[in-house]
Image (cartoon, rainbow, N blue to C red; front, side, top):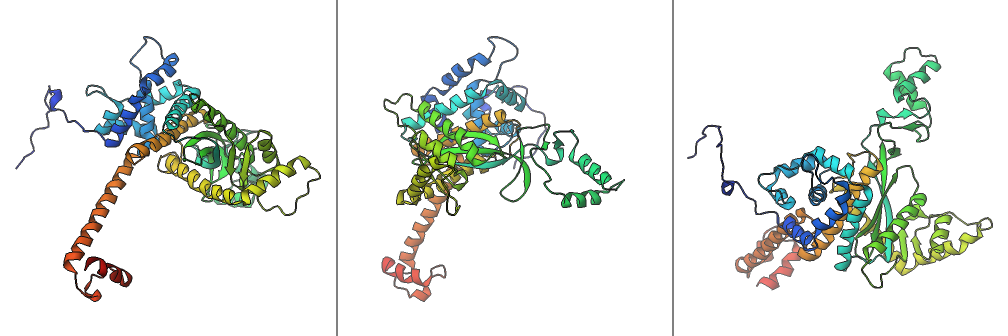
Length: 454
């Protein structure tokens, strides 16, 4: 029996005696993929201008920095503090980061400073590099693209908003309204009652958050009112790969933001297929009825892009004031109602929502811990790159996330248990009456099973 001994540790420990990890099979295969395409050299060349030749303490290498952000996506970690802690805690993550035994993982402040140091276009170039791997694997075409948006809760509190004109806070503003109505010393109940009766409480025209001006007041899908951002995805409908990611204010309408996302998608398709002799261009855009407007139809028709955008019920239309929009709107309506249009609409919901679920829900970015669209978009681009790398990994090993291996193991065990149950039923229940079988078999399954096992 082992007994507890003194707490004093040895002064010298041989490296061969230190605990070693065999590594996570998913991260080991992902590292092999990155090294096969010389990922570290590529990102070092992209980030070379942000580093001084020799100055101060050793910096966080670009390859390790982007791997840390990928860990945030694959492990579902929202904050950079959590990413740094995970790198310290897990030997498998250390192996993925290529950290030697005598080197400590980077602190969260080093990770944050490196993110601020490297500009947005470099993060976008890394995202494009991942898309080029998709093209090589036949997982990105870019001819048919679906666009949709979702809201991300901002790292800012509603109680911190201030008036744009006077700079006073919400509590001070309510107190001034109470004094103007004749209540000299209002209580909290008085202020709450006054706030409920007031119309148009928090307009983005009148209110802002001084700590994050990019965050806008909006109503979330669950009905709550929060400061939030709007993330918009362009997804390849044939493969499910993310073509482009943009970030706008949550108060921007879909008909306004589709222009930026469509332009970004066209540019990304062209950049990802730069080495292809005859690259296919963006030809079709699919979206829900929130993106439908006369101007959207006219713009897409003008650049030669076929639209499959659901049309809201507006009743009988009068085209006397906008005759140029009649033909594009009717053409879009005809395509949406056709069999191919209905099929594309079903695929749109599947592909788009899957990317939202992976990047924001399981990926940990539904609530941001960063402020400012530039900072947030840097992490979003790498998260989207991680999602696309997951598609390549799914083609190589059958799973696209580290947690997918757990599901694969559970499915294998379930299949073995089911097989064992059939074998056991063959030897145990051969010739038995249906009433003698276990209760787990339904009456229908009893009659189906008996001829197979007898």
